[in-house]
Length: 455
Ligand code: NAP
Image (cartoon, rainbow, N blue to C red):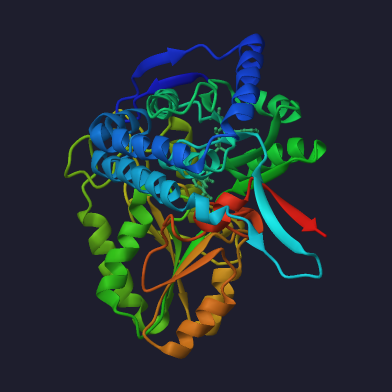
Protein backbone atom coordinates (compact mmCIF):
# COMPACT_ATOMS: atom_id res chain seq x y z
CA UNK A 1 0.00 0.00 0.00
CA UNK A 2 1.44 3.38 -1.02
CA UNK A 3 2.09 5.87 1.75
CA UNK A 4 -0.11 8.74 0.70
CA UNK A 5 -2.82 11.21 1.60
CA UNK A 6 -5.84 10.49 -0.60
CA UNK A 7 -8.94 12.49 0.24
CA UNK A 8 -11.70 9.89 0.79
CA UNK A 9 -14.40 12.47 0.02
CA UNK A 10 -13.07 13.14 -3.49
CA UNK A 11 -10.62 10.36 -4.35
CA UNK A 12 -7.93 12.97 -5.03
CA UNK A 13 -4.30 12.10 -4.20
CA UNK A 14 -2.97 15.09 -2.27
CA UNK A 15 0.49 14.00 -1.22
CA UNK A 16 2.68 10.91 -1.53
CA UNK A 17 5.65 9.90 0.60
CA UNK A 18 8.74 7.76 -0.04
CA UNK A 19 8.98 4.99 2.54
CA UNK A 20 12.14 4.93 4.63
CA UNK A 21 14.89 2.66 3.29
CA UNK A 22 16.66 0.06 5.47
CA UNK A 23 19.57 2.38 6.35
CA UNK A 24 17.17 5.12 7.42
CA UNK A 25 15.20 2.67 9.57
CA UNK A 26 18.40 1.42 11.19
CA UNK A 27 19.47 4.99 11.97
CA UNK A 28 16.14 5.70 13.67
CA UNK A 29 16.44 2.51 15.71
CA UNK A 30 19.87 3.62 16.90
CA UNK A 31 18.54 7.01 17.90
CA UNK A 32 15.62 5.33 19.73
CA UNK A 33 17.97 3.02 21.64
CA UNK A 34 20.15 5.96 22.70
CA UNK A 35 17.11 8.03 23.64
CA UNK A 36 15.93 5.28 25.98
CA UNK A 37 19.18 5.32 27.95
CA UNK A 38 18.63 9.03 28.56
CA UNK A 39 14.84 9.13 28.88
CA UNK A 40 14.62 6.33 31.45
CA UNK A 41 16.66 8.50 33.83
CA UNK A 42 14.42 11.58 33.61
CA UNK A 43 12.07 12.36 36.47
CA UNK A 44 8.31 11.91 36.39
CA UNK A 45 8.09 15.63 36.98
CA UNK A 46 10.03 16.42 33.81
CA UNK A 47 8.06 13.92 31.68
CA UNK A 48 4.85 15.28 33.11
CA UNK A 49 5.80 18.82 32.03
CA UNK A 50 6.39 17.59 28.46
CA UNK A 51 3.07 15.81 28.34
CA UNK A 52 1.19 18.81 29.75
CA UNK A 53 2.82 20.89 27.05
CA UNK A 54 1.72 18.36 24.42
CA UNK A 55 -1.83 18.74 25.74
CA UNK A 56 -1.53 22.53 25.41
CA UNK A 57 -0.35 22.25 21.80
CA UNK A 58 -3.20 19.85 20.96
CA UNK A 59 -5.76 22.22 22.44
CA UNK A 60 -4.29 25.34 20.84
CA UNK A 61 -4.07 23.90 17.34
CA UNK A 62 -6.99 21.48 17.45
CA UNK A 63 -8.63 22.81 14.28
CA UNK A 64 -5.43 22.27 12.29
CA UNK A 65 -5.02 18.67 13.51
CA UNK A 66 -8.70 17.88 13.09
CA UNK A 67 -8.60 19.11 9.50
CA UNK A 68 -5.67 16.82 8.80
CA UNK A 69 -7.61 13.80 10.08
CA UNK A 70 -10.71 14.65 8.07
CA UNK A 71 -8.62 15.18 4.96
CA UNK A 72 -6.77 11.89 5.28
CA UNK A 73 -9.49 9.49 6.48
CA UNK A 74 -12.82 11.29 6.18
CA UNK A 75 -14.17 11.49 9.73
CA UNK A 76 -16.58 14.39 10.28
CA UNK A 77 -14.65 17.50 11.29
CA UNK A 78 -16.63 17.98 14.51
CA UNK A 79 -15.73 14.41 15.58
CA UNK A 80 -12.10 15.10 14.68
CA UNK A 81 -12.10 18.16 16.96
CA UNK A 82 -13.48 15.99 19.80
CA UNK A 83 -10.74 13.43 19.11
CA UNK A 84 -7.97 16.01 19.47
CA UNK A 85 -9.53 17.23 22.73
CA UNK A 86 -9.63 13.66 24.04
CA UNK A 87 -5.92 13.26 23.23
CA UNK A 88 -5.21 16.30 25.43
CA UNK A 89 -7.24 14.68 28.21
CA UNK A 90 -5.25 11.43 28.08
CA UNK A 91 -1.97 13.37 28.11
CA UNK A 92 -3.04 15.29 31.22
CA UNK A 93 -4.39 12.12 32.86
CA UNK A 94 -1.07 10.29 32.66
CA UNK A 95 0.94 13.45 33.38
CA UNK A 96 -0.93 13.62 36.66
CA UNK A 97 -1.19 9.94 37.65
CA UNK A 98 1.79 8.07 36.19
CA UNK A 99 4.06 8.59 39.21
CA UNK A 100 1.44 7.08 41.52
CA UNK A 101 0.68 4.21 39.14
CA UNK A 102 4.36 3.29 38.95
CA UNK A 103 5.39 3.87 42.56
CA UNK A 104 7.02 0.97 44.45
CA UNK A 105 4.46 -1.33 46.06
CA UNK A 106 5.53 -2.80 49.39
CA UNK A 107 4.42 -6.36 50.07
CA UNK A 108 4.74 -7.85 53.57
CA UNK A 109 6.74 -11.10 53.54
CA UNK A 110 9.43 -12.61 55.76
CA UNK A 111 12.06 -10.37 54.09
CA UNK A 112 13.20 -7.21 55.88
CA UNK A 113 11.71 -5.34 52.97
CA UNK A 114 10.07 -6.72 49.86
CA UNK A 115 8.44 -4.71 47.16
CA UNK A 116 7.51 -4.46 43.49
CA UNK A 117 9.26 -1.88 41.30
CA UNK A 118 8.04 -0.95 37.82
CA UNK A 119 10.75 -0.27 35.26
CA UNK A 120 10.43 0.61 31.57
CA UNK A 121 11.28 -2.02 28.94
CA UNK A 122 12.81 0.24 26.27
CA UNK A 123 11.84 0.85 22.65
CA UNK A 124 8.20 -0.05 22.02
CA UNK A 125 6.83 -0.36 18.49
CA UNK A 126 3.28 0.90 17.97
CA UNK A 127 1.49 -0.28 14.83
CA UNK A 128 -1.61 1.85 14.55
CA UNK A 129 -4.76 2.11 12.42
CA UNK A 130 -6.16 5.07 10.53
CA UNK A 131 -9.62 5.13 12.09
CA UNK A 132 -8.72 7.28 15.12
CA UNK A 133 -5.41 8.57 13.75
CA UNK A 134 -4.61 10.76 16.76
CA UNK A 135 -6.40 9.02 19.62
CA UNK A 136 -4.97 5.53 19.00
CA UNK A 137 -1.45 6.94 19.03
CA UNK A 138 -1.84 9.19 22.08
CA UNK A 139 -3.47 6.47 24.16
CA UNK A 140 -0.30 4.45 23.56
CA UNK A 141 2.21 7.30 23.74
CA UNK A 142 1.01 9.10 26.88
CA UNK A 143 1.48 6.15 29.28
CA UNK A 144 4.51 4.76 27.43
CA UNK A 145 6.51 8.00 27.50
CA UNK A 146 5.48 8.80 31.08
CA UNK A 147 6.77 5.36 32.09
CA UNK A 148 10.19 6.06 30.58
CA UNK A 149 9.70 3.92 27.50
CA UNK A 150 10.49 5.17 24.00
CA UNK A 151 7.99 5.00 21.11
CA UNK A 152 8.36 4.10 17.45
CA UNK A 153 5.20 4.65 15.43
CA UNK A 154 4.33 2.70 12.31
CA UNK A 155 1.05 4.36 11.44
CA UNK A 156 -1.41 3.23 8.77
CA UNK A 157 -0.19 4.09 5.27
CA UNK A 158 -3.18 6.34 4.53
CA UNK A 159 -2.54 8.79 7.41
CA UNK A 160 1.13 9.82 6.97
CA UNK A 161 0.54 13.50 7.67
CA UNK A 162 -1.20 12.69 10.96
CA UNK A 163 1.74 10.44 11.86
CA UNK A 164 4.26 13.22 11.17
CA UNK A 165 2.15 15.80 13.01
CA UNK A 166 2.10 13.64 16.16
CA UNK A 167 5.89 13.25 16.10
CA UNK A 168 6.17 17.01 15.72
CA UNK A 169 3.78 17.71 18.62
CA UNK A 170 5.75 15.49 21.00
CA UNK A 171 9.04 17.05 19.93
CA UNK A 172 7.71 20.58 20.32
CA UNK A 173 6.41 19.56 23.74
CA UNK A 174 10.01 19.00 24.81
CA UNK A 175 10.56 15.23 24.62
CA UNK A 176 14.21 14.82 23.59
CA UNK A 177 15.10 13.65 20.08
CA UNK A 178 14.39 9.98 19.57
CA UNK A 179 11.92 9.51 22.43
CA UNK A 180 9.07 9.36 19.92
CA UNK A 181 9.68 8.82 16.21
CA UNK A 182 7.42 8.17 13.26
CA UNK A 183 8.60 5.60 10.74
CA UNK A 184 7.02 6.00 7.33
CA UNK A 185 7.14 2.34 6.32
CA UNK A 186 4.84 -0.29 4.89
CA UNK A 187 3.42 -3.25 6.84
CA UNK A 188 5.96 -5.62 5.27
CA UNK A 189 8.73 -4.04 7.38
CA UNK A 190 7.07 -4.79 10.73
CA UNK A 191 8.35 -8.37 11.11
CA UNK A 192 11.95 -7.18 10.61
CA UNK A 193 11.46 -4.54 13.29
CA UNK A 194 10.19 -7.18 15.71
CA UNK A 195 13.32 -9.20 15.06
CA UNK A 196 15.59 -6.24 15.84
CA UNK A 197 17.03 -6.53 19.31
CA UNK A 198 16.58 -2.80 19.95
CA UNK A 199 12.77 -3.22 19.83
CA UNK A 200 11.61 -4.75 23.12
CA UNK A 201 7.82 -5.05 22.71
CA UNK A 202 4.96 -3.96 20.48
CA UNK A 203 1.36 -2.92 20.48
CA UNK A 204 -0.93 -3.21 17.46
CA UNK A 205 -4.40 -1.87 16.92
CA UNK A 206 -5.98 -3.10 13.74
CA UNK A 207 -7.36 -6.12 11.95
CA UNK A 208 -7.06 -9.77 12.94
CA UNK A 209 -4.61 -10.69 10.13
CA UNK A 210 -2.32 -7.84 11.13
CA UNK A 211 -2.52 -8.96 14.77
CA UNK A 212 -1.68 -12.55 13.87
CA UNK A 213 1.26 -11.42 11.78
CA UNK A 214 2.72 -9.16 14.48
CA UNK A 215 2.17 -11.67 17.28
CA UNK A 216 3.82 -14.41 15.21
CA UNK A 217 6.89 -12.27 14.59
CA UNK A 218 7.00 -11.22 18.25
CA UNK A 219 6.46 -14.78 19.45
CA UNK A 220 9.55 -15.95 17.57
CA UNK A 221 11.56 -13.43 19.57
CA UNK A 222 9.68 -13.94 22.90
CA UNK A 223 8.63 -10.31 22.93
CA UNK A 224 5.57 -8.98 24.67
CA UNK A 225 2.63 -7.69 22.61
CA UNK A 226 -0.68 -5.98 23.24
CA UNK A 227 -3.32 -6.50 20.56
CA UNK A 228 -6.44 -4.37 20.10
CA UNK A 229 -8.28 -5.98 17.21
CA UNK A 230 -11.72 -6.02 15.70
CA UNK A 231 -15.13 -6.47 17.23
CA UNK A 232 -18.70 -7.25 16.36
CA UNK A 233 -20.14 -5.71 19.45
CA UNK A 234 -23.71 -6.49 20.51
CA UNK A 235 -26.23 -3.82 21.45
CA UNK A 236 -28.91 -5.66 23.45
CA UNK A 237 -32.29 -4.08 24.10
CA UNK A 238 -34.63 -5.78 26.60
CA UNK A 239 -38.31 -5.00 27.10
CA UNK A 240 -37.93 -2.72 30.12
CA UNK A 241 -35.43 -0.42 28.36
CA UNK A 242 -35.99 3.28 27.78
CA UNK A 243 -36.60 2.74 24.07
CA UNK A 244 -36.27 6.33 22.84
CA UNK A 245 -32.87 6.79 24.50
CA UNK A 246 -31.77 3.33 23.38
CA UNK A 247 -32.55 4.13 19.73
CA UNK A 248 -30.82 7.53 19.77
CA UNK A 249 -27.76 5.90 21.37
CA UNK A 250 -27.92 2.93 18.96
CA UNK A 251 -27.69 5.33 16.02
CA UNK A 252 -24.73 7.21 17.50
CA UNK A 253 -23.03 3.96 18.51
CA UNK A 254 -23.32 2.50 14.99
CA UNK A 255 -22.44 5.66 13.05
CA UNK A 256 -19.47 6.72 15.18
CA UNK A 257 -16.56 7.54 12.88
CA UNK A 258 -18.65 6.79 9.75
CA UNK A 259 -19.26 3.33 11.19
CA UNK A 260 -15.54 2.52 11.34
CA UNK A 261 -14.92 2.03 15.03
CA UNK A 262 -13.81 -1.21 16.67
CA UNK A 263 -16.29 -0.60 19.51
CA UNK A 264 -19.16 0.57 17.33
CA UNK A 265 -22.37 -1.33 18.05
CA UNK A 266 -22.66 -3.73 15.13
CA UNK A 267 -25.25 -6.39 16.04
CA UNK A 268 -28.52 -5.08 17.44
CA UNK A 269 -30.21 -7.82 19.47
CA UNK A 270 -33.74 -6.88 20.45
CA UNK A 271 -36.43 -8.87 22.26
CA UNK A 272 -39.58 -9.60 20.22
CA UNK A 273 -41.87 -7.64 22.54
CA UNK A 274 -40.37 -4.32 21.42
CA UNK A 275 -38.68 -5.31 18.15
CA UNK A 276 -41.23 -3.76 15.75
CA UNK A 277 -41.10 -0.46 17.57
CA UNK A 278 -37.28 -0.48 17.82
CA UNK A 279 -36.94 -1.26 14.11
CA UNK A 280 -39.27 1.56 13.08
CA UNK A 281 -37.55 4.12 15.34
CA UNK A 282 -34.08 3.04 14.19
CA UNK A 283 -35.13 3.29 10.55
CA UNK A 284 -36.38 6.86 11.12
CA UNK A 285 -33.12 7.84 12.78
CA UNK A 286 -30.92 6.27 10.09
CA UNK A 287 -32.90 7.90 7.29
CA UNK A 288 -32.62 11.32 8.96
CA UNK A 289 -28.81 11.27 8.98
CA UNK A 290 -27.06 13.78 6.74
CA UNK A 291 -24.41 12.21 4.53
CA UNK A 292 -21.90 14.45 2.79
CA UNK A 293 -18.75 16.55 2.94
CA UNK A 294 -17.06 15.65 6.25
CA UNK A 295 -15.71 19.21 6.60
CA UNK A 296 -19.26 20.59 6.92
CA UNK A 297 -20.30 20.96 10.55
CA UNK A 298 -23.80 19.55 10.02
CA UNK A 299 -22.58 16.34 8.32
CA UNK A 300 -23.39 13.21 10.32
CA UNK A 301 -21.84 10.67 7.99
CA UNK A 302 -18.74 11.16 5.82
CA UNK A 303 -17.03 8.78 3.39
CA UNK A 304 -15.34 5.50 4.28
CA UNK A 305 -11.58 5.81 4.55
CA UNK A 306 -10.52 3.95 1.40
CA UNK A 307 -12.06 2.47 -1.78
CA UNK A 308 -11.02 -0.98 -0.50
CA UNK A 309 -13.09 -0.61 2.67
CA UNK A 310 -16.05 0.53 0.60
CA UNK A 311 -15.74 -2.49 -1.68
CA UNK A 312 -15.39 -4.94 1.22
CA UNK A 313 -18.43 -3.52 2.99
CA UNK A 314 -20.54 -3.61 -0.18
CA UNK A 315 -19.56 -7.25 -0.68
CA UNK A 316 -20.50 -8.13 2.90
CA UNK A 317 -23.92 -6.55 2.45
CA UNK A 318 -24.47 -8.53 -0.75
CA UNK A 319 -23.36 -11.71 1.09
CA UNK A 320 -25.82 -10.92 3.89
CA UNK A 321 -28.62 -10.59 1.33
CA UNK A 322 -27.63 -13.89 -0.31
CA UNK A 323 -27.76 -15.51 3.14
CA UNK A 324 -31.37 -14.44 3.63
CA UNK A 325 -30.94 -10.91 4.99
CA UNK A 326 -33.45 -8.20 4.12
CA UNK A 327 -32.26 -4.62 3.55
CA UNK A 328 -34.80 -2.12 4.89
CA UNK A 329 -32.73 0.97 4.07
CA UNK A 330 -29.48 1.61 2.17
CA UNK A 331 -27.70 -1.47 0.86
CA UNK A 332 -25.55 -0.18 -2.01
CA UNK A 333 -22.44 2.01 -2.37
CA UNK A 334 -23.30 5.45 -3.74
CA UNK A 335 -21.97 5.45 -7.29
CA UNK A 336 -23.41 8.82 -8.33
CA UNK A 337 -20.70 10.82 -6.58
CA UNK A 338 -16.91 10.71 -6.15
CA UNK A 339 -15.47 9.48 -2.86
CA UNK A 340 -16.11 6.36 -0.79
CA UNK A 341 -19.68 7.00 0.34
CA UNK A 342 -21.95 4.30 1.74
CA UNK A 343 -25.44 5.12 3.05
CA UNK A 344 -26.82 4.15 6.47
CA UNK A 345 -28.02 0.58 6.08
CA UNK A 346 -30.17 -1.76 8.18
CA UNK A 347 -30.34 -5.50 7.49
CA UNK A 348 -32.91 -7.70 9.22
CA UNK A 349 -33.72 -11.44 9.01
CA UNK A 350 -30.12 -12.69 8.76
CA UNK A 351 -30.01 -16.24 10.12
CA UNK A 352 -27.72 -15.85 13.17
CA UNK A 353 -25.73 -18.99 12.37
CA UNK A 354 -24.61 -17.94 8.86
CA UNK A 355 -20.91 -17.03 8.60
CA UNK A 356 -21.67 -13.45 7.49
CA UNK A 357 -23.62 -12.80 10.71
CA UNK A 358 -20.42 -13.37 12.67
CA UNK A 359 -18.22 -10.97 10.67
CA UNK A 360 -17.30 -7.41 11.59
CA UNK A 361 -19.04 -4.83 9.36
CA UNK A 362 -16.69 -1.82 9.30
CA UNK A 363 -19.07 0.88 8.07
CA UNK A 364 -22.58 2.30 8.61
CA UNK A 365 -24.42 -1.04 8.47
CA UNK A 366 -26.58 -2.35 11.33
CA UNK A 367 -27.55 -6.01 11.59
CA UNK A 368 -30.84 -6.37 13.45
CA UNK A 369 -31.69 -9.64 15.21
CA UNK A 370 -34.89 -10.54 17.09
CA UNK A 371 -34.77 -12.87 20.10
CA UNK A 372 -37.38 -14.32 22.47
CA UNK A 373 -35.87 -13.31 25.81
CA UNK A 374 -32.74 -12.46 27.79
CA UNK A 375 -31.40 -16.04 27.59
CA UNK A 376 -31.50 -15.96 23.80
CA UNK A 377 -30.07 -12.43 23.77
CA UNK A 378 -27.02 -13.40 25.84
CA UNK A 379 -26.49 -16.58 23.82
CA UNK A 380 -26.53 -14.66 20.54
CA UNK A 381 -24.38 -11.84 21.94
CA UNK A 382 -21.70 -14.39 22.86
CA UNK A 383 -21.96 -16.32 19.60
CA UNK A 384 -19.11 -14.44 17.93
CA UNK A 385 -15.38 -14.91 17.66
CA UNK A 386 -14.93 -11.41 19.09
CA UNK A 387 -15.24 -9.99 22.60
CA UNK A 388 -14.53 -6.28 22.72
CA UNK A 389 -17.41 -4.32 24.28
CA UNK A 390 -21.14 -4.79 24.75
CA UNK A 391 -23.93 -2.32 25.34
CA UNK A 392 -27.07 -3.63 27.04
CA UNK A 393 -30.29 -1.85 27.86
CA UNK A 394 -32.61 -2.75 30.75
CA UNK A 395 -34.08 -1.14 33.86
CA UNK A 396 -34.41 -4.47 35.67
CA UNK A 397 -31.69 -5.09 38.30
CA UNK A 398 -31.64 -8.86 37.94
CA UNK A 399 -31.33 -8.64 34.17
CA UNK A 400 -28.57 -6.07 34.58
CA UNK A 401 -26.56 -8.38 36.85
CA UNK A 402 -26.92 -11.28 34.45
CA UNK A 403 -25.77 -9.18 31.49
CA UNK A 404 -22.72 -7.93 33.40
CA UNK A 405 -21.73 -11.44 34.47
CA UNK A 406 -22.62 -13.53 31.44
CA UNK A 407 -21.56 -11.43 28.46
CA UNK A 408 -18.14 -12.42 27.14
CA UNK A 409 -16.40 -9.12 26.40
CA UNK A 410 -13.69 -6.79 27.64
CA UNK A 411 -16.37 -4.33 28.75
CA UNK A 412 -20.10 -4.14 29.39
CA UNK A 413 -21.92 -0.81 29.34
CA UNK A 414 -25.44 -0.78 30.79
CA UNK A 415 -27.81 1.85 29.36
CA UNK A 416 -24.91 3.56 27.60
CA UNK A 417 -22.87 3.09 24.45
CA UNK A 418 -19.43 1.52 24.70
CA UNK A 419 -16.70 4.16 24.86
CA UNK A 420 -13.12 4.50 26.00
CA UNK A 421 -12.20 6.60 29.01
CA UNK A 422 -8.61 7.18 30.19
CA UNK A 423 -9.66 6.25 33.75
CA UNK A 424 -10.88 2.76 32.77
CA UNK A 425 -9.04 -0.15 31.15
CA UNK A 426 -9.80 -0.77 27.48
CA UNK A 427 -9.31 -4.00 25.54
CA UNK A 428 -10.84 -7.25 24.42
CA UNK A 429 -10.94 -11.00 24.84
CA UNK A 430 -11.23 -13.85 22.30
CA UNK A 431 -10.23 -12.70 18.79
CA UNK A 432 -10.58 -9.05 19.76
CA UNK A 433 -7.11 -9.29 21.28
CA UNK A 434 -5.40 -9.23 24.64
CA UNK A 435 -3.82 -6.81 27.05
CA UNK A 436 -5.26 -3.49 28.12
CA UNK A 437 -4.74 0.14 27.29
CA UNK A 438 -5.59 3.20 29.41
CA UNK A 439 -5.93 3.48 33.21
CA UNK A 440 -3.41 1.91 35.61
CA UNK A 441 -3.61 -1.42 33.76
CA UNK A 442 -2.55 0.22 30.49
CA UNK A 443 0.60 1.81 31.86
CA UNK A 444 1.67 -1.50 33.43
CA UNK A 445 1.70 -3.39 30.11
CA UNK A 446 5.17 -2.38 28.98
CA UNK A 447 6.95 -2.51 32.31
CA UNK A 448 9.32 -4.93 33.95
CA UNK A 449 7.42 -5.79 37.13
CA UNK A 450 10.52 -6.34 39.22
CA UNK A 451 10.32 -8.24 42.49
CA UNK A 452 12.79 -6.95 45.10
CA UNK A 453 13.64 -8.89 48.25
CA UNK A 454 16.00 -7.40 50.84
CA UNK A 455 17.09 -9.50 53.79
P1 NAP B 1 -5.16 -3.06 9.42
O1 NAP B 1 -5.21 -3.20 7.95
O2 NAP B 1 -4.85 -4.23 10.23
O3 NAP B 1 -4.11 -1.86 9.69
C1 NAP B 1 -3.74 -1.49 10.98
C2 NAP B 1 -2.25 -1.27 11.03
O4 NAP B 1 -1.59 -2.52 10.87
C3 NAP B 1 -1.73 -0.37 9.91
O5 NAP B 1 -0.65 0.39 10.39
C4 NAP B 1 -1.25 -1.38 8.87
O6 NAP B 1 -0.29 -0.85 8.01
C5 NAP B 1 -0.69 -2.45 9.76
N1 NAP B 1 -0.65 -3.77 9.14
C6 NAP B 1 -1.50 -4.30 8.23
N2 NAP B 1 -1.14 -5.56 7.94
C7 NAP B 1 -0.06 -5.84 8.71
C8 NAP B 1 0.78 -6.99 8.85
N3 NAP B 1 0.54 -8.10 8.17
N4 NAP B 1 1.80 -6.92 9.72
C9 NAP B 1 2.03 -5.81 10.44
N5 NAP B 1 1.29 -4.69 10.32
C10 NAP B 1 0.25 -4.71 9.48
O7 NAP B 1 -6.50 -2.52 10.02
P2 NAP B 1 -7.40 -1.34 9.50
O8 NAP B 1 -8.22 -1.83 8.37
O9 NAP B 1 -6.58 -0.13 9.29
O10 NAP B 1 -8.30 -1.09 10.80
C11 NAP B 1 -9.51 -1.69 10.97
C12 NAP B 1 -9.46 -2.78 12.01
O11 NAP B 1 -8.89 -2.30 13.21
C13 NAP B 1 -10.85 -3.22 12.39
O12 NAP B 1 -10.90 -4.60 12.50
C14 NAP B 1 -11.08 -2.56 13.73
O13 NAP B 1 -12.05 -3.17 14.52
C15 NAP B 1 -9.73 -2.63 14.32
N6 NAP B 1 -9.58 -1.63 15.40
C16 NAP B 1 -9.49 -2.08 16.68
C17 NAP B 1 -9.40 -1.18 17.73
C18 NAP B 1 -9.31 -1.63 19.15
O14 NAP B 1 -8.97 -0.82 20.01
N7 NAP B 1 -9.58 -2.88 19.46
C19 NAP B 1 -9.40 0.19 17.46
C20 NAP B 1 -9.48 0.61 16.13
C21 NAP B 1 -9.56 -0.33 15.11
P3 NAP B 1 -0.64 -0.41 6.49
O15 NAP B 1 -1.63 0.69 6.60
O16 NAP B 1 0.66 0.03 5.95
O17 NAP B 1 -1.21 -1.62 5.83
